[in-house]
Amino acid sequence: MAYTTIDDPTAYFQTKLYTGNDSSRAITFDGNTDMQPDWCWFKSRSEAYNHAAFDSVRGATKLIRPNQDILEETHSTTLTAFSSNGFSLGGGDAFTNANNVTYSSWHWKAGTTGSGTTTGSGTGKAYSYSVNTTSGFSIVKYGGNGTAGHTIPHHLGAAPSMVICKSITQNRGYPIQHVGLTSAAYAIFLSQSNAEAEQFSSGSTNTWNNTAASSTVVTLGNNANNNRVDDNDQYIMYSFAEKQGFSKFGSYTGNANNDGPYIHLGFKPAFLVIKQTNSARNWIMMDAKRSPFNIVTKYMKGNSNSAEETYNYVDFLSNGFKCRDSDTGANASGGTYIYYAFAEQPFVTSTGVPATAR
Image (cartoon, rainbow, N blue to C red; front, side):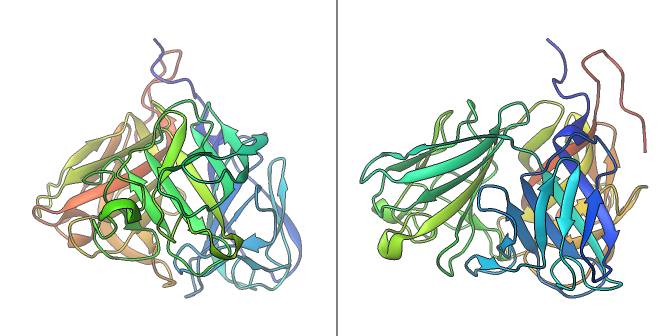
């Protein structure tokens, strides 16, 4: 069996850095030129502007803020198109293209589209989706029905390791199901620094109905963050199934030592996000574009609008990452951390070619 089925990760994920110019423009990717993105996440590096995320299922110009529990907004001068090898921007919006402001953006490809009716308990609701089974990523827009046991097809053909939900019609949070959390009774929130919590574990109000996502569906409780029925609530759901040599989702325990833990990924990371789960800590977002050499020093906080900061958190290695400092952001003594990562290059390609060192 080949070590990976994805020899060129840039066909499915890319980081793009650019400087805003306050004018309408098309931006092309630096890697694979046949990569039309379906989920685009933007953050200003130089200014304290909010994060902004767009996807092709909801449509261009429709943004949500990953660091804030705010409903979907329409901004006509933000992302205006998902292009065959990049994206287009309008002029002057601080989220994506303010003059002389530097930005980092991260992009995932889904692709195949479709629609259907949700299943499980309660009234079935219409949903639409975009999915890429090769890279293990899908986007689903669905209606809530307020009934525990409501199931949402994700179309990945494999159980997702991470699921992110967001109400687009109400000011609600971003609950996450992740394989590194204590169990499916727990949730952690993208827009918050809070630790994981069993706060919705009482009966049917559990966010995930105490049920891990299966190879076909994500099961919901009747919590308003991902399954409310009032006011015709609509939600967006991003699901990720782990793919060897391309993506990895897991957890590790910190040791508060400069010789910190090594985490095996099976690839050289392009993008890494870390979050402590047993204490309140920020989401730490790092990528190889902003830090092309070790130590990886440049990071942004996923739950904050703060500008880019620097700290000696990790090294990116040819087959994983290693914590380089005792700071609690990534390596507190006894701290439990979850992570998700996407590849710059697989450790070994399908033809046996090894990754280069940084």
